[in-house]
Length: 205
Image (cartoon, rainbow, N blue to C red; front, side, top):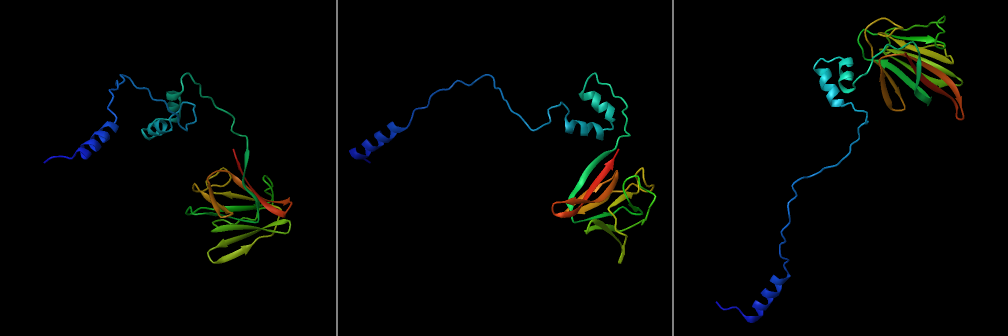
């Protein structure tokens, strides 16, 4: 089968457009550089977790990652107050821990002379009425309103303030739920540009 001169000319032009392969020397070594989002203080979180799961103590883990360190006892009697709810109109405190207790105290931290206590509550709800906080205790289908006050303190079982099983409480406000195991919570009415609102603060050692 004979090809036409025109076809041969097109084939020649097309083949001349294809670049010829060039030989490239393969490097004998490679170097990689990168970065991550770690805290940069030299402790592997996954490594520490693996050591803990293997039964290593916190002191053994610290001394593995940090050489020549001395672990000392520090005074833990200081109280740290952490704001957990800012300028709220309402909030609710509850627990799902079985056989637990919640305690509500009228007044500021340390003012325990007036103690309306309600144990084993399903939930304690707070709302702002005028310049005071109004608490409502719900146990099953029954509801009990307590006398309003400027300040209330909430304590729960399993802490230094109240004996009982280790308890985790849930604080719900603004559509969010936060859980706490330690401390005691102050619920206080404060004045704001929008009127009186609720501030919630957890006090922990």
